[in-house]
Structure formats: C-alpha cells, structure tokens
Length: 227
Ligand code: CA
Image 1 (cartoon, rainbow, N blue to C red):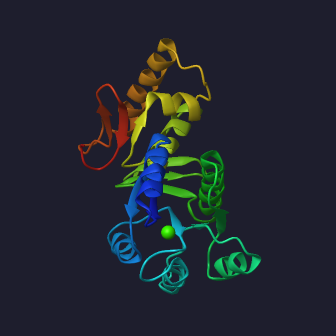
Image 2 (cartoon, rainbow, N blue to C red):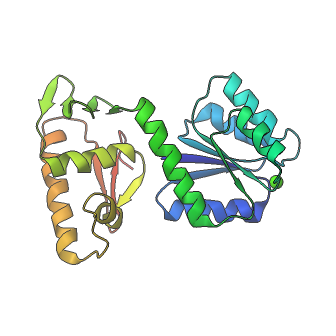
C-alpha cells in the first residue's frame, strides 16, 4: 500500500514517514501542493494524508482539484483547525476523514486501516500483477490462461503478497497478518518458508517470468521486476 503525505512541516512529515514505513506502508512525502501534484501524476497511491495549512495552494484547494480530476483514493485530512465549520468544509470538499493535530499515531493508523479497507470493499474484488489474477469472490487464481489451485493458506498468503505488491513483506508481517501469530518463532519462520516455496512451485515455476523474489535476511517481494 502506497501512501502520499502532503505536509510542509518537515518534523511532522519525517515522523509520519518513519511511522508509516515501520508499519509496512510505502510513504512518499511532498512538502507542498505542487510537489504533491507531481507525485500524484507519476505514481498511483492508495491513500493521501493531507495537511490543510500549506504554503501556496492550501489543502482544500488541492483536495478539490484532486476530486475534479476524478482521483478517488481515500483522503484523510490532518489539520490544526478545529472548528465545526472547517471540518464540514473539509468533508464537503471530498475528504473521507480528518484528524485534529496533535494526534496519537495509533489513532492515525486505525483510521488509515478503516479507509483502506473501505476502498478495497468498493473496488478490488480482483487483485492483479502481470498475468497473475486473483478473484476474491470466486477465489479463483489464474496465471495467463492457466488455473491454479491453492490451499486456503496459500490463497491467503498470495492475497497478502498481492495487496503489498512492490513492497518488501517481512516474515514478521506474514506471521502477524496471515498466520495471526504475534509470538514469532523459528518454527513459524520455517513454516512460512515452506508455504512460500509451495506457492512458488505453483505460480512461478511453470512460467518464465518469476514474480516472487526473496530479499535475503529481510523477507519477500512480489513484483514483475527482480529487486
Ligand atoms: Ca502545515
């Protein structure tokens, strides 16, 4: 999941980047609306964290322009303004949620998760990378024209990798989010490796282009290009 942060206060922006990165998100920072627009035009994002008080074009103008251009990813406003009127204006301009500064980081994470989940329910019932396709409704997986049969655990694992495609996924993240074990231990690491190996056999081995890559000592990445 890739998040863009438009925030002119360097300290706040850096703290956000660090916190989000630790959670496994890819976070890009723009210190002005112009920088933000540039990044939005060159990459696709799953969510935008938008500060309202910015030099030059302020956050609300940016938000209106984004919505006018038809970009429909969730936007969470970060604002020091705390009047009912400001909140209403923000939500009317196309924001999905807002948080008043200063805020507790865990609360921000919780709001982000809700927005990302909501976005997912609306649009992504299909996950795709190159010619690999996963249909979350029928639970069918295909690579090109070939159907691939996965166990429940393999399916969950591949779904997680697809949702985090292009991102490094650590064994710790897999233990927590796919196996739902908070106590990570060596036997679980081994089990994760076994499942990755089985998944590779099914989705990669029969095809010339490999999608699952190992990052030694760190984890895995699902992407078209080897990292
Ligand atoms: Ca600001």
